[in-house]
Length: 264
Image 1 (cartoon, rainbow, N blue to C red):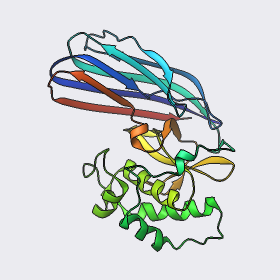
Image 2: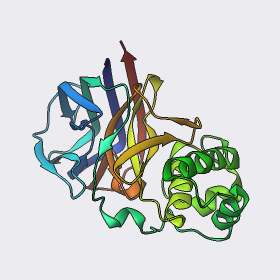
Image 3: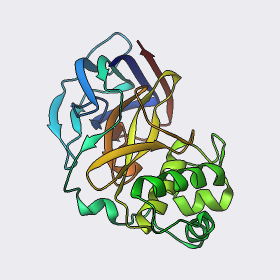
Image 4: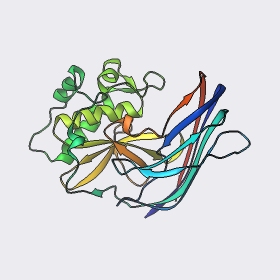
């Protein structure tokens, strides 16, 4: 067993005050076969002096931990802080004999078009191979198809669009791999979380091998092991955004994200 100590901070500065700000957060790890949450805390501040918003705990349709809140006061600052300690098993494996069929269906972000189908054909999979063997081949195909290039794509970029440009970041690698897996009738889901080191959040893919969920990181072309902390999973990025909100007022936004994960 290993332990991950994580801190996450996400701040937004508005160009002018806003109000009626409702938000939803997926920033807290959940217990599963791979990870056991020893401690976790989170807080939302809506001014630099540290005034906090009340948070309400819930669970979404995929079983992810969700916190929601509402800020009615005028504010031009919004900050999410969370930290915790997670015990990680040596092997990333989440038993599940009956996966939800929704993870076999295409979405707008993972729909297979000409670029995905061409990449799938080039992978030349052996139909006699196991789901795990196929997943490894497709992970390498996704990794090689796109050059890691921050700023070229956004969270609404589809797998097809990323393949056509040949550039993207972790969510693009994940969407491409998910699209490839689903075309081979392998259940696949998008995962958001943290990875050892300092930087931003990360995305990877869980695939179902017939008895359990296992995970691959197509950005780095490797199996996911005990240096990752899972926050949420879903059909694609749209199901897993760490923060989603809506407010009243016309204002520009400046965002900063900081993630630190230490494994011991």
